[in-house]
Amino acid sequence: MASSSAAGIGMMQQRGSVSPSKYSKPLSMCNQLCLLGVVMLASFALLARHAYSTSFALDDSEVDLPLGGNVDDEGLQHQLPLGGRLQLRERKQLDYSPRQTQKLQVDVDLDSIVIDSSDAPNVLQKNRPLPIKVRKKLNRYSNCVHDKGIQKALGVLSQLAYKNPKLFYEDFREMACKFKVFVYPSSNEGNFRTIFQPHEKEPTGNYASEHYFKMALINSSFVTSDPSEADLFFMPFSIVEMRNHPDIGTDGIKYFVKKYVERIREEYPYWNRTDGADHFYVNCHSIGRTATDEALHVRFNAIQVVCSSSYFLQPFYPHKDATIPQIWPRSGFPKEAESIKQRKTLAFFAGAGNSPVRAELAKYWSNDSEIKVYTSRIDTPYDQALLSSKFCLHVKGFEVNTARLSDAIFYGCVPVIIAAYHDLPFNDVLDWSQLAVVIPEADIPKMKKILKSITPSQYGQMQSNVRHVRKHFQWHASPQPLDAFHMVMYELWLRRHLIRRPLDLALD
Image (tube, rainbow, N blue to C red):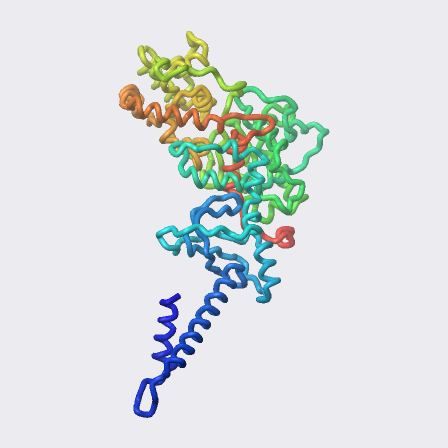
């Protein structure tokens, strides 16, 4: 304050005072003290006015707040240095009375706030907490994630298994509490009921992921009956059920999808707002890549959530579409080998030799003593072979996707991926370079050398990361936090469409 007073006196001397001359007399000591008092009072008044207006956030589009330390905004934890800004997206036209400013302090909408500390000081200063009422407002998502078990499930995220663990941690919490999906209704009766309704019993088989997603979604809190609050719209037809339906079959799928989308466009206004960019469907069967042959606007606009996520042989667009992991359902977590040393086999693969890549693999390694490759019957139980191997091979067959990738993760075996142009599951979140070894097809002859070049400490870290993320590859009919269903929902959350035409225009 002394420096402020001194600066004020200096300004008074330069602008307000008259320099001594023969026509003036020096100010008396009393007058000087009075002048100093006036300057100090004026400085106090200006500082008080500034502090009062900023702490209650009046009508400025950018308001400087004396914040520091942890700020819990919609359950997100940030380190905001002193001088960081809270930006209000919508300008508030408010009266400056204390009653009105106090109301803004309590009722400010979290959705209108963005934390921005780009121009804040580099050195963190002493923490100054937000007022109690504002902190309660900011903590509302913390209560939500606690009630849903999200907070406990998140626990401590592995720093290496995720591309950005802090961002995923924060964004996932918001998604769990805000994300809403409208499911287009369908009749419980009729010849096509099974195509739209979820399974009544837990699914089994190679394409169970498609059915599990639908069951989990219906049993989750993400579904809304109010389309106006929906972020995305789910078209609940099943490719697997259509393939096996006597009135549709493989050849009829593309025509069924075309007619279905035409009907929802006529009966509902929501597709036309975005040309389908906020609509999605789920498919885990390879035949699904032809499902939109007669409805190209669905292929190019809607979000395709698929197991066969190849961007080389079929129309999969990673920036728009999402990958659902193909999983063969297995109950509970398996009994694991007590230590890595008990995994005696260097690498293991079992599967039909139905592709040139698998034929190449068998050519070089089917008779090796450290690498076990089976293209017919295996001489040991499948789960025991996975538990006793360090690396488990995921090799492209007819398609890039198989359940072997999820099997490897389930049994704590580090995957080796030999499948070009494969957009791996949850690729937006997981750092696959820390979870798996990716080998080009041309390097199959050098596979043993590549795997043996990985040091024990590197392998131990990779295997630890695999064990950490395997909860993301488990399906449950009633979804559990951070399981496969929640991870697919998070991928959809990242792709939600935010620009829409007004409904009156969409109806034209």
